[in-house]
Image 1 (cartoon, rainbow, N blue to C red):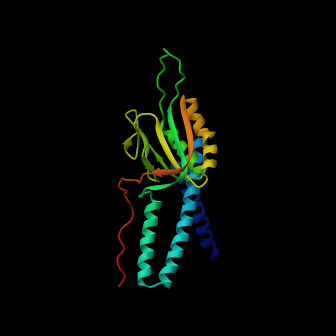
Image 2: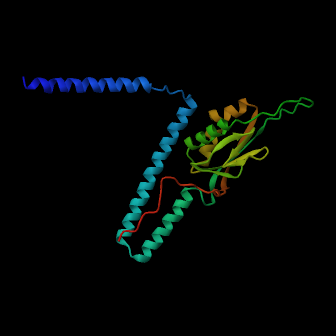
Image 3: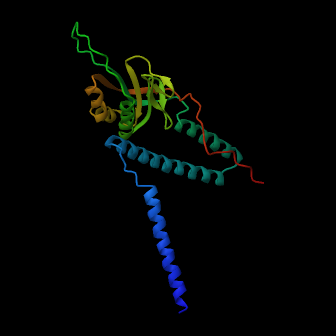
Length: 235
């Protein structure tokens, strides 16, 4: 008889939990994922790239920690300065150069005299997809119209104009500079990519030229860091 109250309490607890779950499900129904294939691919590539960057960063800091443990004061300062330089380069805060490709995008001119055709318009999503395709084909660094593309770069439309890093894109042709370890391979892949095909369907001419030296400008905007504050020195 003594076990009955315990059994009733256990059953009541289970029923109460089931009712709570049902109530939560009713009030917060599962939202169906309505992202299209482009968005899913882009999110997947972002996650893959983020994971790779985290692994590389973990390796760098592990090596830096080992140096701190084994080297003297001067060597530690030198290692810290090198780490700071590497971080600035990784964040896009320095100008970089190397082999890559130079792409141009401009409205297609069919050469028909006297034919008045409206100028095609670039949608911000088209540029985002092109950036995602470049990253998928192992692009190292990208700039569009002189604006360095970093993880926080916004590409949006404001009053009919496209803004990158809160700066309006200039007139055509739009120039895209890309660094890559294998620039010839990148050139071959991107020129036949779905993102470029979309530009062509919208009546744009897209050209890509491999080059042994491509220079990209530094990101010159302020980077706002959230959820971070200086750590207190240990005594």
